[in-house]
Image (cartoon, rainbow, N blue to C red; front, side, top):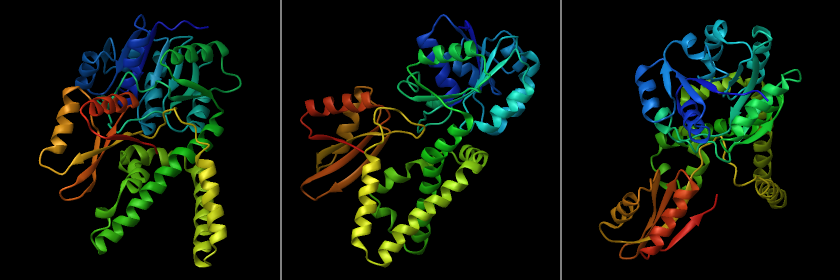
Length: 369
């Protein structure tokens, strides 16, 4: 197994910053170097203990690295590789965190010298916050992390990378580049398009007749949450993986047309069968693994209809340093109780909030999605 004593991360955003913080927590003996275009970002990364030191000069940052991680936007990865190529040392491992794999793996096989080992990577983890501000040392715990080596990839390099990613608590999955792109297109990229199309459809209706979004409850919000993600980032991802995505769009349109047909014909039996099939497959989705789509852990809290009720809850949780990232007033009845829906970025925060609120006499229920 190759020994990794120095890691260079190029791009100190959400994923790059989180990787640095996680490495410094789990493997403090390893030196972590950051490369970024902005000196302010480098300084912040040092302050947050995501890196030991950083530079804007790629050559200086990668020259002695055993492992180099490309954490730039997908559209900038190849140009970045050409800049660092002359400085990579013999035996170095190069990996990326991009959402598509086939194209970059193919190009790397052509341009990299034999003594540099490229292994495609894709951490299936995300956050509702972008950039270094959203970075967390816990982002990869129990998250799927896909590696896409080729058949001829040096097995010692694969073991070395896998071992160090294991230390982050990630669940390593080995796939071919093509298999990765097909499967991620289905479970990540297609849902993003569907969510965006749904929001745009209702948005068009809202322009014609206001009040649709006023009635939008938790189901609509949960289904469309990913449509609020960074448009530029997702534009790059969707265009890069369009070859895998376009056939899936056709299949999805066929599924919608099947629902349309049973509604037109009032075929209750067929409609029930389609809904039962959907429920069957939904129950097959594993729980406990984080995903690339931001996850929300939620509570439903009954509150009295009186001034200051919401502030009492937010102040109570804030005083315990529990961060609420989403809040919704679901129902309020005059001179009666109302219902709050609270969202947290981690299950541990939700569980802690539940204990704190119950200790104060609130009726609290976990929301399962």
